[in-house]
Length: 247
Ligand code: PGA
Image (tube, rainbow, N blue to C red; front, side):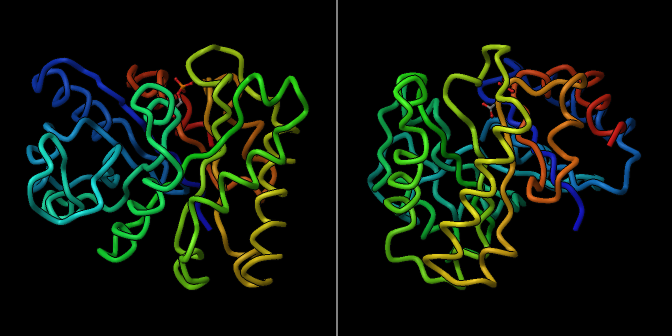
């Protein structure tokens, strides 16, 4: 299976004009057909790319779990689907830490995204404190089980997981490729225990946190890591293309 590289633009850039320039740069520069690329711009820019022929897919950075109604400021999966997105990032650590999003809320969002036929990209990862206290594995197992509550194994198999330790995001302090691999294998082990061998083998786990052209390849050597979630480096199209075109 092709490695999956997801660009998470977060709350950037600040104008549509800039977003269009970035997309044009990607369209012109992406040549590597051995990888699947997904770009996740802010919601407000999505519709302007809807009818364009792109060599990559579009994703969203969040969604709400209801389809419509009195939920001021929220965007539903149904609306997102209409903009042409295929993937939705859920439970990103910035949403958990800054916006106070809980595992229970992420669980509802995962269910809504799965029901719509889009693909959830579910982020998980330990805090620096948990890591320092040697609690990474315990906390991640708990977090995953809460986020996946009452989701069938057929549906769990459709989820893409992204290991994004809080301490590695936007810090320049990337997790070593060995540790990321250990975590990907740990997630697969849990999936095997809870959902069986088939899910264990097929589930995709990405790594994200301070990825750049200098370290990207080291994560992709092992087939247990199915791809990367790239934040900061995806805003510089040249840097992002360096990552993708070198795979
Ligand atoms: P970063 O962000 O690459 O800037 O560390 C990754 C992410 O938040 O998905």
